[in-house]
Structures are given as C-alpha cells and as structure tokens.
Amino acid sequence: MIGAVIVTYRSDEETALCVASLLNESIDEIVIVDNEFNVDEASLPKALGDNLGKVRIVRPGRNLGYGSGINRGSRELTPTCKYLLVCNPDISVLPGCMVSLLDTFKNKRVAVAAPKIISPDSTIYPSARQFPDPITAGMHSVLGLVWPSNPFSKKYRMEDMTLTQENRSVDWVSGACFLIDIDIFNQLGGFDEDYFMYVEDVDLCWRIKSIDRKVVYCPKALVQHAQGVSTKTSPLAMEVAHWRSALLFSRKTMKGLRRPLVVPAVIFLTFRLVVALTKRASMRVVPLTKRAIGRLGQLVVAFTKRAIGRLGQPT
Image (cartoon, rainbow, N blue to C red; front, top):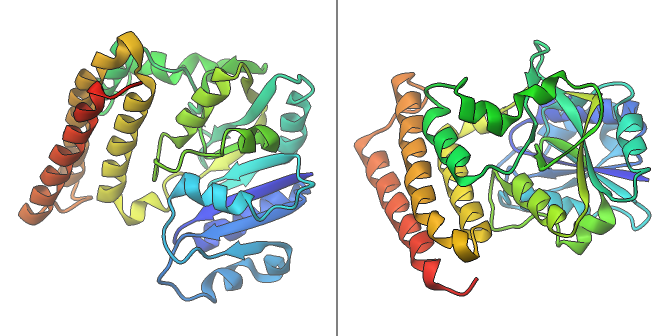
C-alpha cells in the first residue's frame, strides 16, 4: 500500500488538484496536513469537493514547516502502508508515474525513488542533485543568483540528468515529490525537524546514503510542479528559512577535518542571502523597510554566532 502525505499552506485549490491526480493513480491513503492555523476551516473541504471523503485532514494548529508536517501526517497512515509518497500541494502526478516509481523498488537497496519534475510549460526542473563539495557549494552560493548558468551551479544541479531516460542513482532528490520505503523513513526518524523549510530533503538523503541505501532518480515517472505557491505568500521569511537551513546542514554534516569549513560556509551563505534579498527588493517583490533590515540583521548575527560557536563542540 502507498500512503501520500501532502503538506499545504494557503494552497487549497492546488491541493485539491494534487489530490485528484493522486486518486487517479490509485493511491491507497491520502493525508493532508494543513499548516495554516488562522483560516476558514471550510475552505479546504470546499476546494476538495467530492474527494473530501477520500482524504484525512490534519490541522496541527500552527505552522509546523514542511518536514515536520510530513512527519506528522505519516503518523496518521495505517500500519499496512509500505511506501510513503511525499508531496508538495502544487504537484500533479501524471499517468503511469506510480507504476514507474514502484518498479524501482525491485532493487532491495533502493530507499527512495523520485520522479522527473516538469513545470507547467514543460521545462524540466533539476530535481536530482549531488552533495556539493565545499568549493562547488561556495561558488554556487555566490554565483547562482546572479549568473545561473555558471559551471559550479550546473555541476551542483546535475543538469545533464535532464537528458537521461534511464534510472540513475543520485545523492539527493527534491522533497517536492518522492516515494520512500516507510520502514526506512521511520528507522531514520523521518525528516529532521530542526529544519523548518528547505534542505530537509538533502539531510534525509544524506542519512539514507549513510546506511548504504540508494536514492534513485526515475525520469520515466513524471509529475508537474507549479513551484512556490505557498512560498509566494512569505518570500522574505522563506529566503531567511533557506539560509538558516543551509547553515544547519553545513554544521550537521561538516565533521572531523571538514569542521573548520563551517566558517566559510557561513560567509558564502550569508552573502547569498544578502544578494537574494537585494534582488527581491529591486524587483519590489519584498519591501525591505529599515525595521525589517534591522531585525533581519539581528537574526543573521545571532544565528551566525550560534553556528560558529558550536565549532568547538564534539562532533
């Protein structure tokens, strides 16, 4: 059996479309975790329409974030579920997707199978990636926002993967949509709830690889992803969340001789955050008031001190 968990935030219409696509693929159970805590509770059921009785809605009463939301929803699935389908609310599973993903698990070492993700205009999103080495990660952070086609970002995003039609083992895949063996998910404690948004997928795949299991990209399985529907409601907070999560991952995984690399990681990632916010402000996407800049600066300084201050702690 396959149980799907969708984490949504102010995305009722998109969630309803996602549910419809999952039902068309004969998903056995669907749990929706609604992270919006100040909402008309009739809105999502109304959007679901006739499919309301085919899903379970969980309302935590606060915004848990993405990984924590998936963890919460997974606990609602029946014990007979063998696989967990992790879903953004703005994805639509295309016909035949689940058959292709399930077929991947014939290899008993596979822990995760992930589809090819395409946008509504059929552009392929680079959803299968490698764990970046420090130089690649740093240069991608610095150059990615101002020169997207730079060689470091291309290497990090594994853009050649968009051309393959065969399954390939990769380091990590996007948490927008993937199928995971639920026993392994539970064995690892699910997503690390230290991450509010972003990088929780990288962290989970890192831990999967550490127990010598495979993460597989399946290009014949297709999903369509609108991307960023929930993120658009709070773009400033999401940029900060991405920065914070990237720092957390650096601190959690840079151990031993790599531990001193946390300091340059802080510098590169903070530079990226400044560039991202400046870019949004110039596009008038985010109005950066003096008060907002001040509060953001305090947050950056406080979190950076914490990240660097823990360098001396045991690893």
